[in-house]
Picture: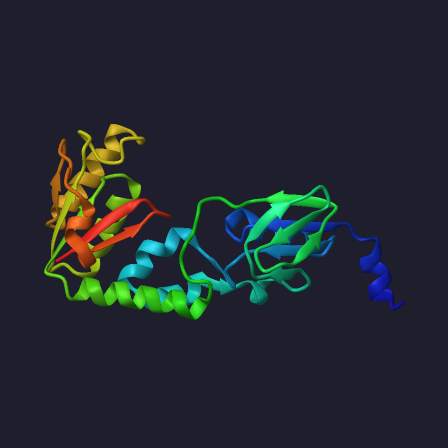
Length: 224
């Protein structure tokens, strides 16, 4: 047995399920001190805070989509979803049985997007193309995601008519009134039409292919 094999033999086996912020951080932090396996159906980690910027500037995603193999030096990545857990192993959708001494579950929200980095980049390119061809943009929801997205589009596409509809009496209501007022003033200065105390009550399916639903970040867009 080599020195490396002897060293690995005494290391605890840590299985991390989920390749989001929490899972990737744990895997990276522990890989030098444990025998780490990351289970994630995607081949990449995506910086979630950059998603809206990537819609208007897809090239930005080249820096925010990072393959697990690029930052993990000794940890192993099993590209599959975890299907079940016993007392000592994780069984994946691909049939792998991954034994562990310690199990870390960091699955977070559900993501139904592509499993490869290349496909995810193409998705952002497609969204940018759709947005570029739109004359008007309707954003439903004035929470942090809706407000940020309206700002991103208004900055990169100042010529487009953007409407933000929010059911509450102020934007980003979980923050203080001062923050809401600043956000409203900034958007209106950018010619974004902000409609408060109102809501869209129809069916999103009415718009057919014009509707994009992204449940992972909880907003709906209508490009027309």
